[in-house]
Length: 143
Image 1 (cartoon, rainbow, N blue to C red):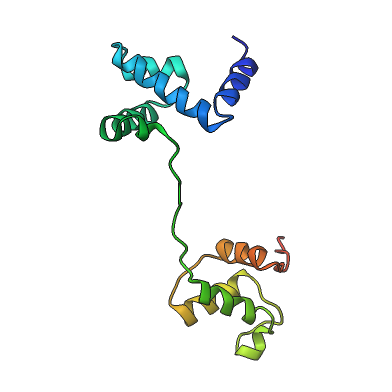
Image 2: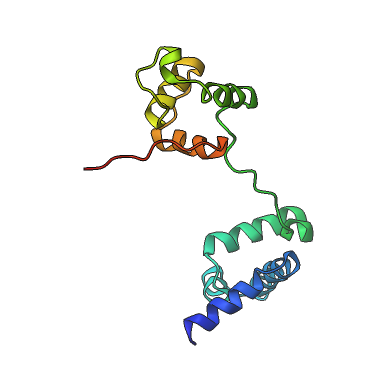
């Protein structure tokens, strides 16, 4: 089969919540009829780990276990009040707060967060904070 056709079919399966539920139900049906997890994985195009997770959820919660689950992701390291303070600080010059530099960059913001909140964030994460705050850090100069 042409890989592009397989991609389109997989995309159609994932298009709606109902079709994803039906796909999970189909996997459980294949397992119930004696297929092994690696066979179902290859047949449906889903990782074995995913198939096993669906089986576990079905065993534990029945049909309800096959419905969509909210994925919250990693909890934020900074509280809303801290983010608000960062937003206010970015409106000021770093030198006004005792930092060397005329403009904020990822390294300075990382240092500020570590000193003020005791939280270590990498330079890249701090650059993402600039985007979240609607401001742009200076471009990195590479030589």
